[in-house]
Image (cartoon, rainbow, N blue to C red; front, side, top):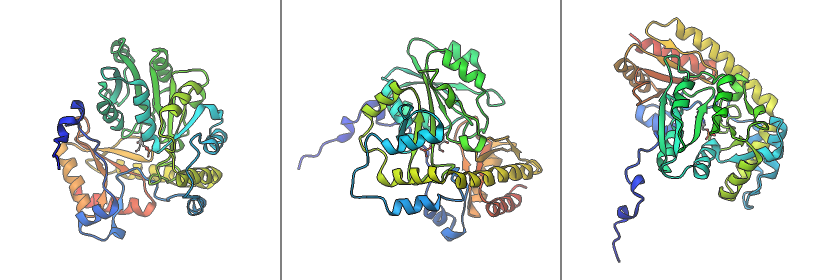
Length: 364
Ligand SMILES: Cc1ncc(COP(=O)(O)O)c(C=O)c1O
């Protein structure tokens, strides 16, 4: 049998690509901590502690798993139209908003095209830029994690095509002001406003979509609707961009279980939004507790997580490790900007209590 050196065939820019630092599943975390899975407190993925709607679970159980899903996503787009108040022609669903981020790169970015991104933020934009061979311009947010429009304008040339902003920003928790969204839109670049945490703040720029053909708003069912494991997200944008994305997506990108869960969740939105209300109330309580803790600076957050800053990187690493040793998992970051920080998701009141108790023990 011939032995081919497949490495030689890999596209050069992907041979040693820096991959996405993802989170491990509960059983792996539990094994690492040496405690039963049922005892761990998992606050590292901004997941919904209340889980999905029981109606979504029922719908998934009854979904026609032997039939391919609708490639045109007719029912999902109609239902999303009722939820968002925008016409179905403005909507497209993806296997998580992650897939839509990837599709936007495939649609707009050729090797060498420029992407503007704002550090610190959700690492998926930079990851997709690397995978497609784009030229990533990582602009630094200021000391309040805001973006500076002067720097943005100075960074634009004829290879600049797309700008990504998460609002609220993961992991810093702050919103992008509407005035800056409009300034970004006026640059003429494609402006992607990632509203993964929309339901936790109630603030959106989706109503600008009919007016601005270069605006793309991304949303997800992972956070507010508790469907992270099923991978369902959606985007709101001009019918023209929707049509291009429809043309290039894999035909059956959202599976029938995801479709059934999305439809049932939107039907059950009032109950799911009650859970969102509980998470928002818990965020306020957790913020208050953290503010009283010596050595921790919690940043205000509009999402379902709080960024906690420590006096130095070594301290943050020690807290992260010692929390993990006690079965409490938060998110840490490799980047220079966030070396002295960790991010904690807002869980149930019992999870907050367990996290706070462990944190008190390890913050010395
Ligand atoms: C800002 C932001 N966008 C998108 C996502 C991914 O969402 P999905 O689960 O829909 O792929 C996340 C997940 O943490 C996120 O924080």
